[in-house]
Every structure is written in structure tokens, then in C-alpha cells.
Figure 1: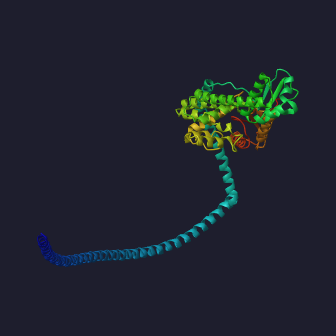
Figure 2 (figure 1 turned 180 degrees about the horizontal axis):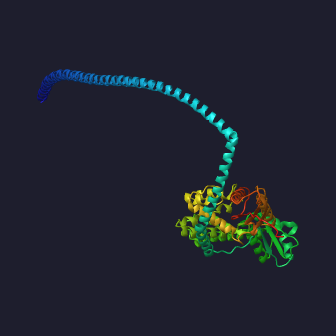
Figure 3 (figure 1 turned 45 degrees about the vertical axis):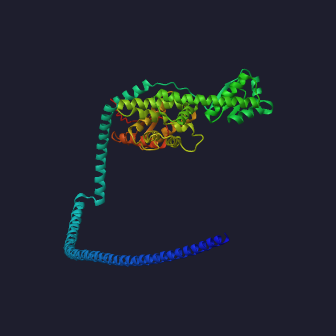
Length: 511
């Protein structure tokens, strides 16, 4: 048994060794084949690389040849263009030389003609001088005296003809224009007649009794100081029975103070905290009144799509006056007048109404912003996106800017009509007298005026001319000169009629 096991072990060992030898022989053959295959592949790759190199070199040579050819062609083309340009330049130089020669030839001819003309002018001047000497001997006047006499005669004749022509033109214009103008303006005024209430810069608050004055003043004046501080309006408590006067430049603040004081009087409880409460209530109430007044104005005129801030500014004009005329009512009337006249003349009534309603919008804030109400109004309309046509029509209503449309002229006319209509405005007696005196003073300084009288409440100046210094033709120029001087030196509403009279009397006695 042991011998069998030993034999088996020997057989296994011999088999293992035999297998190992066979496996090793096979591996060596495989490695040899792989090395051979790798060498073949490497040689093939080297051959392909060499072939690719040759192809690239050939392609590069062909590309270089092509580029060189294109460059040569371009050089030849540019050289040909340069040669053409050189030929054209040579031709132009030759043409220019020929022109220069012609110009030099013409200059020589001109120089000769100039010398000839100068000699002829000298001869002509000498002949004129001799003729003038002869004329002076014949007429007995020197040259300057004759010239002055001739100019004087011509000026006299021209002034006479101009005066006659001016009269004819004015008469014709009056015949055709007066009737139509009266019809349009009268119809417009009649169709939009408005009531005017005279307002001032002070408000009067009635009191139930004089005891209320002491309560308004308060202990050591604390109540009246509180009212003045919160409203910005001065309270004047004097000997006027049962009344308190509110004085302030801002009409809206004055209205707030008036409403606050009336509420306090009705309530009866007057102390600083109650005053503050009533002032706040009055401010809200006045703000609503302002908004309603602006909306009512736009509705009444028929102007739509107005910016809400402009509507509020229009409402503020309810408390603004000019010469006693309520500015909001004035703006509404101007809008109606301008719209009616625009319709009669075939213009744009919508534009005229809009510009008329907004023409005094600057007066709503002119006490808060520097500048004239016209410039302030222009800035406001631009800020709130109004059209340039409305701005132009509004800007020219006082002559500060040139009228750029016929609607702008209508705004100026409507503004003057509304302001100058009897009863529309009032002014202080002192201002009125000064204006009349200034009007007569302007007329009296003119040459040939004997006396002048301001009549019709300053709407007409009647001038008596000196008959020995001013003839019938000269009074036309005298009236025009005085009217221009009044326009430049005097401020007045509406227009002033300049009426010049010349009277010649012949007196004799029968004996």
C-alpha cells in the first residue's frame, strides 16, 4: 500500500513537471509571435507616417505656390491702378496749367479794362463837378443846400401821402373789421356773462359777542398764538364790534384759519389742543373744496384729461384774487370767451378752452415759487405733460413771449376782455389816480399837444393839438406816437383809445 502511494506520488510529480514544461514552451512561442506582430505593426506605422509627411509637404508647397500667385496678381493689379492714377494726375495737371494760363490772360484783360474804367470815371467825375458848378451858379444854392431842400420837399410829400394812405387803410379796415369783431366779441361776452365777487386779502369772522374776543385771545395770549402759529395767518382783534379780522397773503391758509375759527366759536371750547384739532379738520375740508372746485371748473368748461395736480391747482385759484376779481372765475370766463371766438373764426376751440382755463395757473403758487406767474405756469404745464401748443398759447397772454398761433392771440384777447369789462376788476383810488395822471403826462410831453384829458375811467385819452404846429396829416402820426409811448411806459387793463383833435377857427367882424 505504501508502495502504491509512493508510485502515485511519483506519477503526479512527473505529470506536473511535464505540464509545466509544456506550458512554458507554449508561452515562449506566444511571446515570440507577439513581438513579431509588434515589430510588423511598428514598421507599418513608420511607413504610414512617412507617407503622410510626404503628402503634407506636397500640400504645403502647393498652398505656398497658390498664395504667391495670388500675391503676384494683386501686385500687378495695384501697379496697374497706380499707373492709371498717375496718368490721370498728369492729365489734370496739364488741364490745370491750361486753366492757369487762361486765368492769367483774363487777368491781364481785366487789368486793362480796370485802367480804362478808372480813367473814364475820372473824366465823368470831372464832368459832374463842372455840371454841379454850373447848376449851383444857375440855382443860387450849394450842393448841400439843394440836397436838403429836395429831401425836405420829398419828406413833406411822403408824409402827406403816408397820412392819407394810413387813413384810407384804417377806414377800410374799420369798415370790414369793426362789424365782425363787434359781432364775435359781443356774442362771446353775452353767451358767457359771469358774476364777479369783490374779494380782498382779509377775511372777517363775525362773533356772537365781544366776550368771545377774550376767549380767542386766551390766557396770556396762548390761544391767539396757537391759531396764528398753526395757520400762518395774523388775527387782528381791535375795536371793531363783534368781529375778528384775519389777514394773510396766502388765501388758502386764510380760508383754513376762517373755517377753524368759526368751528371753534360754534364749539365754544377754545384751547390749544382743540385749536389744533379744528385746524386739521379745516385743512381737510379746504382740500376737498379745492379739489371739487377744480373738477367743477374743468367740467363747466368742457376740458378733459387734465392732470389731477393741475385740477388741484385750479381749485386753489378759487381763493386767489387779482384786483378784486376771482382768478378761478376769470379763468373760466377766459376759457369760454376764447372757445367761442375760436369757433366763430374756424380755429381749434378745444385748444383755446384748455389754454384759457390754464392761462393763470401760475398764480396758484406764485407766492411760494420765485418768478412771474407766466414762467411758473410754463414750468407747471411742462411738469404735468401738457402739449406744447397749450403751453405756447398760455405763455403769450401778457406779451412776455411771442404768440406762435392764432389761438394764442385769442387767449390774450379773451384775457383782456375778461379783465377790462366794467365791474370785473377794481383798484385802489390812489393807483387809479396815479394811472390817470401818468396817462395825461405822457400825452402832454408830445410835440404839438396843447391839452389832454383822461376820460372814460382812463380807457380814453382826448388830446387837443395846436393847429399852428400840427396839420391835419400830422395828427395821424401824433396819435400813433402817443399810443406807442403809452404801451411802452404804462401798465393798464384792456386798451386805451387815443383821440387827437385839431380845430382851426377863423373869426371876423362885420361893421
